[in-house]
Amino acid sequence: MRVMNHVFHPFIDNFVIVYLDDILIFNSSLEEHVKHVKQVFDVLQRGKLYLKLSKCEFGKNSLVYLGDIVGGGHIKIGPTKIDVIVKWSRPQNVTKVRILLGAVQYWRKFISHFSFIGSHFMLLKVLKSLFSGEENNKKHLIL
Image (cartoon, rainbow, N blue to C red; front, side, top):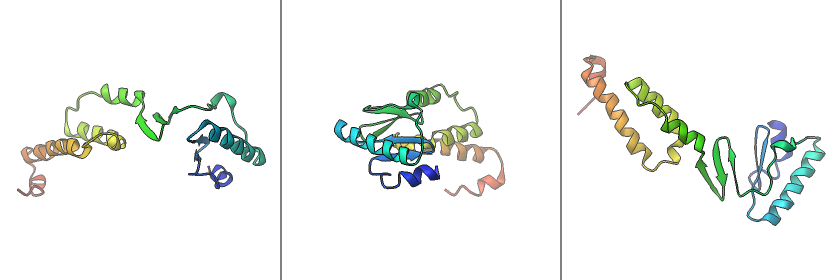
């Protein structure tokens, strides 16, 4: 990754994003895209770095990247990630609620009022500790 960041340093965040061995080139027009792809090819050639053509996609308006759909200046949750959450089994105890909340933390930026929705789960956790009879848990709840 260090090599990629080094060779693409002048372009990073201008029209290139590099993550590990992935190179994303983003533009507002097809003409810009062609120009920037040529610049990226030149940099790769000078650095003696190679592409695997079967993994390359060019001129796309959006693409699936790390499981999300990226394009048009937006990031959307990819369908496989949505499917995982939809098929998630209903939490049956506080530990399972914590696991679910931890799993969906990444998507909080995509979900309106995520903190409000999540607060209901945290209230369940507090109520359980209230009624569990554990004195240590009761002292943390101040009404």
